[in-house]
Length: 96
Image (cartoon, rainbow, N blue to C red; front, side, top):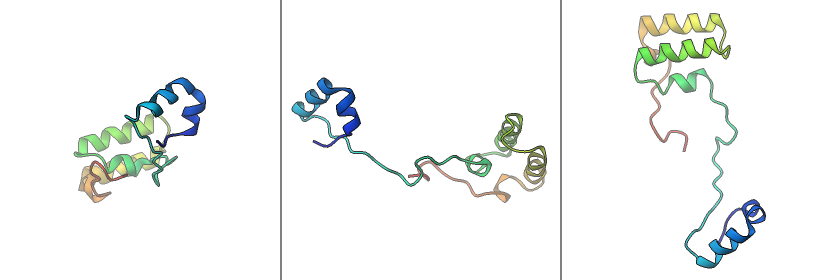
Protein backbone atom coordinates (compact mmCIF):
# COMPACT_ATOMS: atom_id res chain seq x y z
CA UNK A 1 0.00 0.00 0.00
CA UNK A 2 1.40 3.38 -1.04
CA UNK A 3 0.14 6.74 0.12
CA UNK A 4 1.35 10.09 1.32
CA UNK A 5 3.62 10.07 4.37
CA UNK A 6 2.09 13.36 5.53
CA UNK A 7 -1.31 11.66 5.69
CA UNK A 8 0.18 8.84 7.74
CA UNK A 9 1.63 11.30 10.29
CA UNK A 10 -1.54 13.39 10.54
CA UNK A 11 -3.97 10.46 10.76
CA UNK A 12 -2.11 7.48 12.21
CA UNK A 13 -5.18 5.48 13.23
CA UNK A 14 -7.04 6.03 9.97
CA UNK A 15 -3.84 5.31 8.09
CA UNK A 16 -3.46 1.98 9.84
CA UNK A 17 -7.10 1.06 9.11
CA UNK A 18 -6.67 1.88 5.43
CA UNK A 19 -3.45 -0.06 5.25
CA UNK A 20 -4.92 -3.11 6.97
CA UNK A 21 -8.11 -3.10 4.92
CA UNK A 22 -6.26 -2.99 1.60
CA UNK A 23 -9.24 -1.28 -0.06
CA UNK A 24 -7.52 1.93 -1.09
CA UNK A 25 -4.29 2.71 -2.86
CA UNK A 26 -3.33 6.35 -3.07
CA UNK A 27 -0.47 7.60 -5.20
CA UNK A 28 0.72 11.15 -5.35
CA UNK A 29 0.18 12.57 -8.79
CA UNK A 30 2.42 15.39 -9.84
CA UNK A 31 1.26 17.21 -12.92
CA UNK A 32 3.39 19.66 -14.83
CA UNK A 33 0.86 22.36 -13.94
CA UNK A 34 1.36 22.15 -10.17
CA UNK A 35 1.54 25.71 -8.82
CA UNK A 36 0.62 27.19 -12.21
CA UNK A 37 -1.33 30.45 -12.09
CA UNK A 38 -3.59 30.84 -15.14
CA UNK A 39 -3.54 34.11 -17.01
CA UNK A 40 -6.10 35.98 -19.07
CA UNK A 41 -5.45 33.85 -22.18
CA UNK A 42 -5.95 30.66 -20.19
CA UNK A 43 -9.39 31.86 -19.10
CA UNK A 44 -10.31 33.17 -22.55
CA UNK A 45 -9.34 29.91 -24.21
CA UNK A 46 -12.05 28.17 -22.18
CA UNK A 47 -14.82 30.48 -23.42
CA UNK A 48 -17.34 29.11 -25.89
CA UNK A 49 -18.86 32.42 -26.93
CA UNK A 50 -17.80 36.02 -27.43
CA UNK A 51 -20.19 37.04 -24.65
CA UNK A 52 -18.41 34.73 -22.20
CA UNK A 53 -15.07 36.17 -23.26
CA UNK A 54 -16.27 39.75 -22.74
CA UNK A 55 -17.54 38.79 -19.28
CA UNK A 56 -14.13 37.30 -18.39
CA UNK A 57 -12.37 40.47 -19.56
CA UNK A 58 -14.78 42.63 -17.55
CA UNK A 59 -14.27 40.49 -14.45
CA UNK A 60 -10.45 40.43 -14.65
CA UNK A 61 -10.32 44.17 -15.27
CA UNK A 62 -12.64 44.81 -12.32
CA UNK A 63 -10.36 42.78 -10.04
CA UNK A 64 -7.31 44.65 -11.30
CA UNK A 65 -5.77 41.49 -12.76
CA UNK A 66 -5.45 43.10 -16.19
CA UNK A 67 -4.96 46.74 -17.12
CA UNK A 68 -7.65 48.92 -18.63
CA UNK A 69 -5.57 49.17 -21.81
CA UNK A 70 -5.32 45.39 -22.19
CA UNK A 71 -9.02 44.99 -21.44
CA UNK A 72 -9.91 47.58 -24.08
CA UNK A 73 -7.65 45.92 -26.65
CA UNK A 74 -9.17 42.49 -25.95
CA UNK A 75 -12.72 43.85 -26.16
CA UNK A 76 -12.05 45.42 -29.55
CA UNK A 77 -10.54 42.19 -30.92
CA UNK A 78 -13.37 40.05 -29.54
CA UNK A 79 -16.09 42.33 -30.92
CA UNK A 80 -14.46 42.75 -34.35
CA UNK A 81 -13.11 39.24 -34.98
CA UNK A 82 -14.46 36.94 -32.30
CA UNK A 83 -12.78 35.13 -29.42
CA UNK A 84 -11.21 32.43 -31.63
CA UNK A 85 -9.15 35.12 -33.36
CA UNK A 86 -7.34 35.64 -30.05
CA UNK A 87 -6.82 32.08 -28.88
CA UNK A 88 -7.91 28.53 -29.78
CA UNK A 89 -10.54 26.74 -27.72
CA UNK A 90 -9.19 24.48 -24.99
CA UNK A 91 -11.40 21.57 -24.14
CA UNK A 92 -11.83 19.63 -20.91
CA UNK A 93 -8.73 17.61 -20.05
CA UNK A 94 -6.25 19.98 -21.72
CA UNK A 95 -4.27 20.41 -18.49
CA UNK A 96 -3.82 16.69 -17.79
